[in-house]
Amino acid sequence: MIPKILFILFVIGLMPFVFENSFAQIKSGGFGDSPFERDYGDVKFLDAYFGTINEKIEIDGGDSNVPFTVVFANVGTQDITGIRGQLSLPLGFSASDGPGSIIFADSDSNSLAGENFHLTFFVNIDKNVKIQQYPGTAKVDYSRLRESGVRTAFADFNFKITGDSVINVKAQEPFLTSLKTNNVSIEISNDGSAPISGVDIVATNTQTELASTSSSTTNVENVVILESNWDVGQINPKTSKYLTATVYVPEGLKGDTLRIPLSISYYNPHGDLKQISKIVDFYIKGLIDLTVFNVEVIELSGTQMVVGEIINEGNQDGLFGFVTVEPRGDSNIVSNTQFIDEIEVDAPVPFNVPIEFDGEPKYGEHDITITVRYKDSTRDEIFLTHDATIFVKEPTNDEDGPDFTMIIIPIALVIGAGIYVIRRRKKAKIEAS
Image 1 (cartoon, helix red, strand yellow):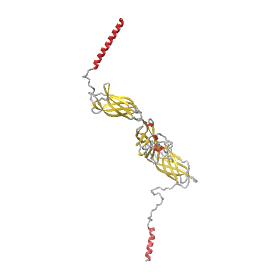
Image 2 (cartoon, helix red, strand yellow; image 1 turned 90 degrees about the vertical axis):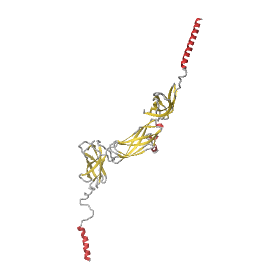
Image 3 (tube, one colour; image 1 turned 135 degrees about the vertical axis):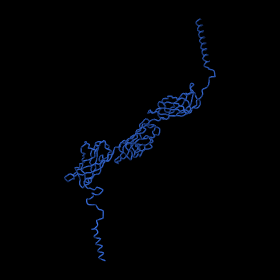
Image 4 (tube, one colour; image 1 turned 60 degrees about the vertical axis):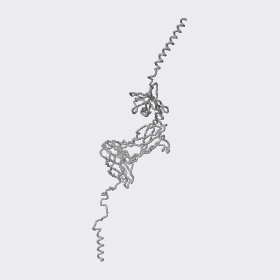
């Protein structure tokens, strides 16, 4: 029994020498076969982009003398000095000194152990370079403190031509009218070559915001804007988005320019949050509010005429006014126009248009349209139409009655001749005596 137990223990002790170790392990050669590169050195690449160490910038094909920054970390245990960089970029990119020149950069200071440092190169970009990702290589020469000789590190990386975003704003209709509520549409366009996302717009210096500010930069606090914040989203290159607002303008701003400042925040192609300010301008017109009333037919000097009045309840005179009477339905009244000049505020302006017929006169009811044509302060022509029904009376028939004109004229001639004869006889008697 005891020999069997000793044999079993002997076999168990021999197994590690017969079979290979089954635990996970890294083969000889360190981390070289790992999917993640773990080569150790003094300099480690962190990032590469167009811009400076403080800010990334958007660039496009054809830009010149553009800063290109490569960021490294000193991951060694000693400080390094004498840092000098050389940049290799693909076709279409060249040094700012001109084609064929080597792209060099020097660091302004030493790099302490565990700290980051950067190299800024200046690059010209060919106008035919497309918006996409490109490969690049940076070579860094440096020296360790208290050590002679120069060490060299290489870094392969990818960088991107982002394109350039250009944001513009404008009003779809640049005119507002005082004394009324205006529906405003503002166009936000991206005229550049790079998309922008997360676009959020705020109208600043409004009445709500004015309470928390010491002063106003525009006159927008004098109007009422019902909407002041808009979430626009993404705007692709060469496209536009639109935002709408409801604006009430009081009477006192007639003739002024309303300036609405907009604060626009968005994410650029680098993913950085940006904020810019734009101003949308509107010209405020006066209100011309016309009403046609008291339309009827009267007879003047034997001619029947359509008469009426126009009242302007706004705060701006209408200019170069015309009134046109046109037939509707089966009416055969001929269209006729009268010039009435200015249509002043709060002062009824009368009009009278003679009635003429196309063919035989038709008496009784006629459906007509009265059109008032005028211009506002910006010389835009405006039309106001008013439908009405008039009654044209048949003229009185005087053919069977006596013609008093034929009677009165002979009598007047006879009386005149008698007076003449009497005066001649009196004069003859006076001369005879």
